[in-house]
Image (tube, rainbow, N blue to C red):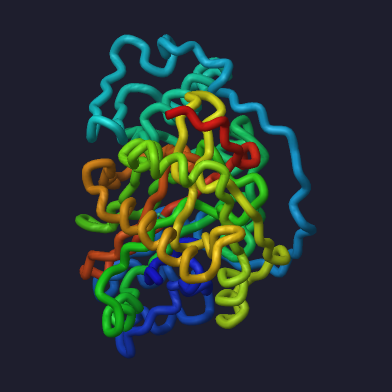
Length: 375
Ligand SMILES: O=C(O)CCC(=O)C(=O)O
Ligand SMILES: [Fe+2]
């Protein structure tokens, strides 16, 4: 599994600020916490977190099972000409034909509700959108959380770190000087770990927000794959074979990995069954909905049948560089993706020891469903 503090099943779930160098000031940070960061600023090239309010904590709160809720996607109410989101002066730059757009000139935090509806729809169409020059990270965390809540009930992650008092914010943090990637690459060839987020939930996320707090000078990009295009590339016969199939998605391994590291377990893990192909409620597009992090088996198939089919689908997405986009982070970037129709992977490719720190706000959406098959 990837060595990053993402939500993959076996990632370290304790603060990676427990730095592993044996000399220098980094060691002093482990495992006391973050209060020494300011003191160490500038020593041995150490840079304290730019957004200390977003450093990860692992409280001991426990939450009951998630209850089903009604989700009506705001993209359904959107003006399809994007009068507010893409007002005159806003610049868009498509990263690839089918997935990914970079946008400058609109301030997400200032959008009216109508603008937010347009955002939901635009992201569903473009699959992932990088908004530059945003003030999101500088807002009080409460305001960022309230912004996200418009799009759906906010997911509280079962295991990941969160800013103190904001369990709805999922943090990705690789501390300055962190060396755990070196150990990872002793036994693994690549950090790529394709997944859609928390697909084991009965109602997994839809419009999802990830924003950068500290970023290495080069590296630590995020890969995205268009799962609609991945579906469309399949032959009608194969698409028809997938129609009606369901797969199990498990949150158990993620929780077990967290327990193994003395990490947080906020909620008992669940296993859900979802259609292998899901329909997007706004665009009507069909997307492949399996991923190697959380999908376990095809319901009703024998083990070998299930494994061979899932391996084909995972490889198909992973090899599909012609329906993938790579997002480069820059300070003040907010990336928004539609988790129903994309998968993504963090990349751990930088060797500079620079901190990488991001926050995710994760509105849940409808339970996945599939509409009738049409050749
Ligand atoms: O760190 C990244 O680039 C992505 C992490 C991730 O998978 C997530 O936040 O859902
Ligand atoms: Fe993720």
